Amino acid sequence: MELCSGQTNSFLENGLDQYLPSNIDIVHGPACAVCAAPIALIDAAIELANRENVILCASFELLRLKGSVCDLLEIKAQGRDVRVVHTPLDSLAIAREEPGKKVVFLSVGFEMAAQSNALAAWQAKRLGLKNYFLLASQCYFPAVVKHILAVPGSKVQGIFGLSSVCSVTGMVDFEPISKRYQVPIVITGHAPTDLLEGIRLCVNLLENKNASVENLFRGSVSRDGNREGKSLIKEVFQLGDRYWRGIGVVEQGGYHLRPEFQQFDAERAFELQFEAKGDNQACISREILLGFKKPTDCPLFGKGCRPGNAMGSTMVSSEGACASYYNFKNDRQLLA
Ligand code: SF4
Image (cartoon, helix red, strand yellow):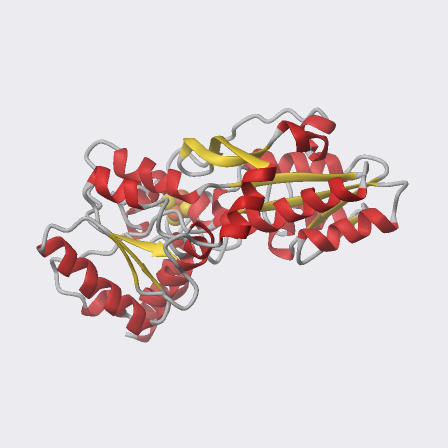
């Protein structure tokens, strides 16, 4: 199983899936943070953007993510103060410039996002800001790997780790998981040669019955990861259960603000109520993300469900497995 949307795209775009021997099958895990964002989170962001004196800040990709009824771009078009920012520090600068407004930064992501959001909350506290809030769904990736491997009947025999996540976590957080479930984890990149090298190493480890964590991305991943980043994350956040769209609740699967930083928690400050909302009942995103099925097994794939009219988690972003299959496999079929 690969756990990186860049890897999914690279596999399909370069046609590697066509050249693998029949006893190697690549399945696509939960690699896309936008796909993991609960619909209720977008609904909450829309509700906030509609309030007086609120400036809602987010990346452009999140503004396009549809909630139950509409997306934030439509709210912006209706005249609400919704702004595109690239980092949480951009939104922090807006909070300093606009002390009379409440500035909310909407964010979804994995360890990289947790690291920069931790910096923003830490900085907001240092500056004594009272008008800055995070509305964030930040996922702790090792917990989801554990969740996938713990599912009864899991067919996953080897895992490709995300280089971006591992550049923060390092290898250490994955080592007990690899050992417990006897599944090798190989951290590798996106390029076709990285993927082929990753497959070769994974097969070698399996043949030698060696369940260990190996690193092919030594330029940016070390065994301990980014110590300063991890210590900042630990200072600001604590782990707790987190709802992942398409998968459900993952035990200890997300970062939540510690009590000392809860003044920046938009959920608490605005008393937001989250109500989990599922995808279309025919959607098989969960089975795809757990490695039991492929996007092309879904009866809605390319018919009712396609980019621009997503009916489930793995089609909402170009980084999702269903969107990748739609973009690259369809192209290939057209060219054939
Ligand atoms: S094609 Fe759409 S409905 Fe089917 S699994 Fe993918 S996201 Fe869900």
